[in-house]
Image (cartoon, rainbow, N blue to C red; front, side, top):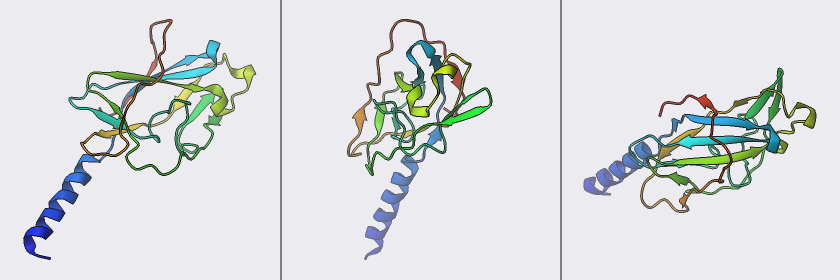
Amino acid sequence: MNKLALLVVLLVTACATTLAQPWRIAYSYEDDPSNQRLVLKYENRTSRDVCLTPENWPNQAGMLNQAGDTAYIAIDGARFAISDVNTGYCPGCHFRVRKGKSVIATMPYSHFGIPNRLARRPKTFHFEAFGQECWQGVPGTQEFRGHEFRGHEFRGHRVPGLR
């Protein structure tokens, strides 16, 4: 391989690696015991689009890919982990959140195995979500529409992130 070709391969690899580095995102959550669910909201306040992977934001069914060890709700000292699901290998299955836009997702209590007797107890959601810069040519990237959530103003708990 000639030196120019090797240099091009190294530069392309380095750029792709740099763009894909995830960072912890800040999001809010709100307990909605009347509907037995958590409501999550992410506001993209960065200067570029952010992509969220299925491990880092709930899908339309309210599930997180392989998050049984990392996502849980604490109630009165008890820990209720989300059901561990494997949505399958899907390179590029990111959800794009445009700069200045927000997404809302819901997660039913049933995904955490929360008994009905604890539905109205105060809850703390534990989960670190990560986003990454979106780039052209990622197969499977979709515009994330999330769930519409109407009926009251969102007053969630803030989960800090770096961006």
